[in-house]
Length: 189
Image (cartoon, rainbow, N blue to C red; front, side, top):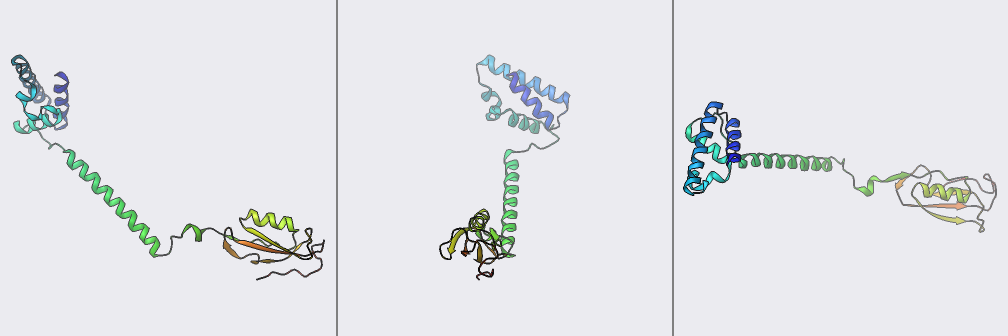
């Protein structure tokens, strides 16, 4: 009972009811609840259906007596405002996303991941393959005369080209054991 009255006092204060009027209303409420208890009646029998929620009861009683200086905020109104804000934010986000697509600023993950092919000419076969792999390429090797110790004299695609990550780079290896070896360095396009 005292908890119900305290909750009503807080609501009356929130509604702008003066302290003296709120104290008078609390005294009347305590008397009504005491009388109901003495008669064996429930608070709902004396106070009505609003007795289940002290905030609603306090607001309706203050309005009936004409002592509330502010209207109570309904939960519906508060939730409606949150819904309107959420919808507005969602619409703005969708609009921004569509604008990015319309102006070509949005790229798919596949097209956004490109790398520049390194120049692998004059590297030993193993070094060139490791460099290409470190850039995220697949490597195919074409060797001349089956020499695994040779140097790269050509590559495809050529160094400096921008291609999608995980593309294949083909390196052409000669049989010479010197970087300036048997063939002139060139790129295969």
